[in-house]
Image (cartoon, rainbow, N blue to C red; front, side):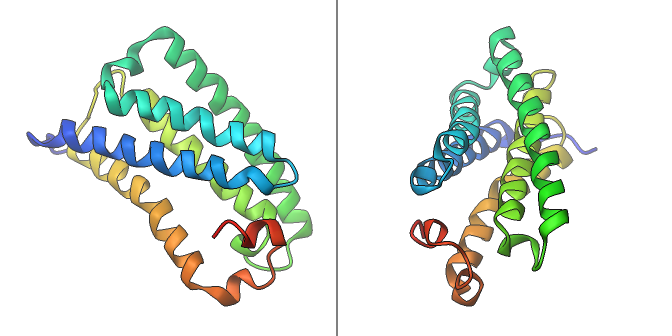
Length: 166
């Protein structure tokens, strides 16, 4: 693993702020979902936790921050198992065309990001490879959102509450 450069701390903070913004947006667009409360919390909690790390990376070492992150990771893992199983039983199309698939993907993004933040307490930025993973993950939702926005045919079969948010 190569050492992180002098701009690594700022890049790590920027990734956290980008993810905080994305996750806050993900929470906000859940407003018209049939189970909005659940999904708003699922995205708002990691948005807040990421915002804290973006503002002060040392917070990842705080016991309360760590326990809240661990609890959220546990709940996301349970939700991902449930959504993945439901998608596998009822899948008729690709992952992003099924609501359970989109829920699964969202939970996986949250879980991977929160795991990365949780592990940052030991080393705020880590090596160059870990920072590259953080940059890739933080850009993934932006790229996916743009892809879905541009791909109107994909959205044609989605339920109305999913179409209205884009």
